[in-house]
Image 1 (cartoon, rainbow, N blue to C red):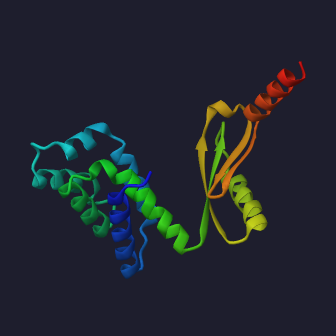
Image 2: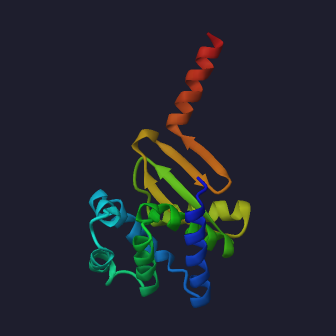
Image 3: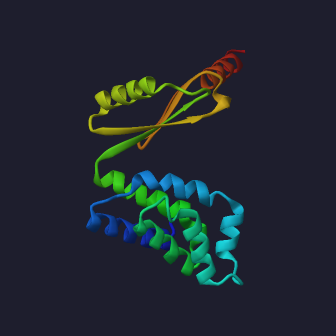
Length: 176
């Protein structure tokens, strides 16, 4: 989704991060998780709640957990009534950071938790095939039944039982 505001704010945060030589990527999930709370989003977008009170809410949630740069950034978004765009802005910002650092992200979808060793092995195998740096994240997806699905910047590699069953179903229908 292209939104001029998302681009403007993500680029602004990126430029500040470059100046400070600190991309703060480890803190983004803390913010995303908090902003998943609909009550927080409603409070920060409510027209009858003053900007000062909104800043107090943001400070109360994040002051101890994120750098001042990100805290101030959240204040700006709130003051400009852009709190509903936080997740999209952070995603666009993260894309800029990874592109700058030439790091490819892989999301590993499995029906169960993998060990750090297995995740590292997946990253190493992908890195060997593609070259460059790789960051691996995992998300549980019970619909896969078994196997694994890798979502990369270049596409999806689906080795799940769910896909194999669907392929078999299509083959049986086609041959019937």
